[in-house]
Image (tube, rainbow, N blue to C red; front, side, top):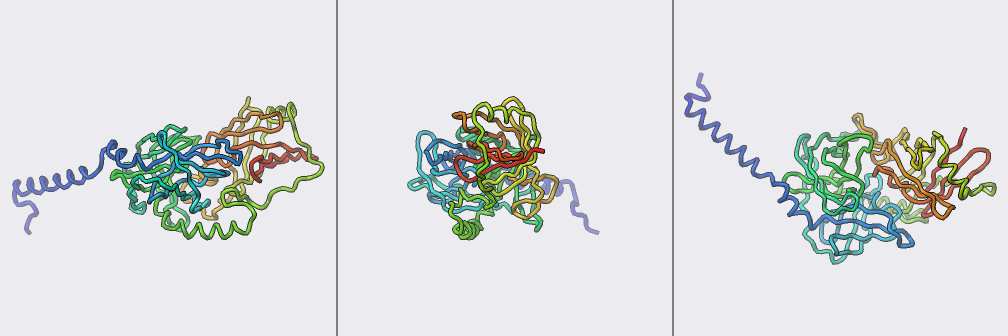
Length: 368
């Protein structure tokens, strides 16, 4: 039988050749500073404003084509006006495509002329590969972080639904880019688990291919309702009752200061969910997603519950405003659709309804 390595010289030559090939492969990966240099002009800060032109929040967006950027839909929730910004340069933007179910939206900013990023193939992503997240956490523009692809979360049909990564993201990172070691966009950073460490998720970029058609279907469905696609909410809005009482001032404050743990229905721009609310936490409240069925009707494989955009448990802060409303802010991206100000109504015998002052969203529960 002929041997593969007849002598040490032949074996050494083979190993040298293999080493050269490995070195060429490793050399193909870009250094982090080079990735940043290539894509920095194409990752923008998103600022959204309400109907009174008051700032509502910030997020991120990535330029994928001339004047067109991709972002997370929950960044735009309840927005009346959209801006993108980098340094001291600001552009107005408008909604082009929307897919709330996948939390993927496309906006257009006229006269924005940066070079679009190179689009990768998220179907080729593998666990263990190096990735980089670039966005604007807490409004801190162009923050770069790195990590690994820690898992690939698939739906019931075996299709990639989320890229799980250890690259850190925070509120404001939503809509930013997840890049591979070649500087190609493989995902849109969307959410994280606030009650855990290094559990961050991105929408696979290949879903962008289906966005125009899915948006067309969503807009056709939304056209049957009087509200706009971003402001549209579930039709289960509770009717206002003549016996409802608006809680004001001290009554409003005492309600939130009272210790309670109740199951509530939350109707938001992202759909209807059930949540557990805990109040009486010294200016804070706790919220837990207890929805038994995902709005998309496609359960996720694996042990991570990604309902309500991966938010399962989180904390919020509340403050009184003008003695007639309470304003909420949550620490988890997944509960951002609940941000805003509400008026609290009481209906006999023990039903409470928080009605948004900005749209038709509400939170309702009954005390035992």
